[in-house]
Length: 343
Image (cartoon, rainbow, N blue to C red; front, side, top):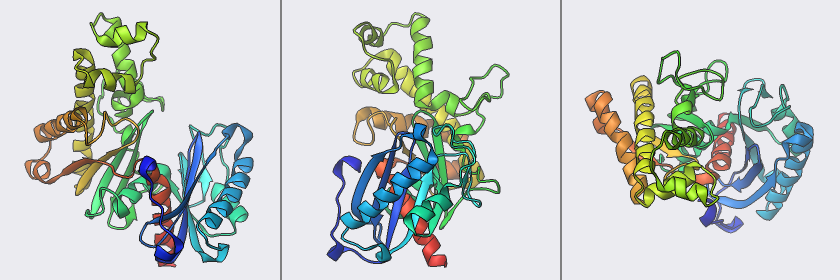
């Protein structure tokens, strides 16, 4: 959606209005959204995490005022603001605990400090949970009652929505789907969190790159070796390009990634029994419109059919997410909308 973003005018919008903010390690995305999830304005600023959380929240506050003005609205027209942030966090207390992508921000009371700067009530959520709510509200999951979103990128984020409830858990660590154990061996692959055998260690973009390097070092013939010799950097994107061109080793890596994801998804299905499982994030192997993307989905579904209860395998919907990089700020606005309605 990011590349084809369509903004509506004030006159086309349905009040009340909300601001959604998606805080990332590199950029902060935000926009004003109406009661139907339609964006009126959008703005992206650099996070610059090395300058510290106070500096960032000051600049976020300035950007919020700007994005409200872009929408043709006044401050008093905004009902609530929603903030999606990378974890770990204490949602009830509004604190960042130890966010991997925001070094040095440990223990920062980000919800209250942003509220101080924007003079609005702030709803606080994990960024992947916010993205999941965006897909549930106005994206690929809008026809569902429940869903799981897996965001495939450097790591694997997760969001679980049941009804209007985003599953955050007793300690704000719910829906950490990337840290499900899919390999109990003592020598299982090491996850970025320091534990072994997690889904993220097998099926994230980082894992795809690592597994490809191992295959190439073991002597696997591949056009990838040619690309690397020409100066290309090894990445999941490069693997996808060569797989789409028919390279055998690259296709094996994609198929293996699908199998690992299928194993993890079956555990989620048996625990939650959702209407659908959606795949978001940057690593989509071409997405829904590509032959490779469809092969990727088919590989996941094949593993689901092998391992899941037959009724669940028959009824589950597996699809790519729709909102792309906009899911976070749109979902954060949706969570703000929920809080406004409750209060």
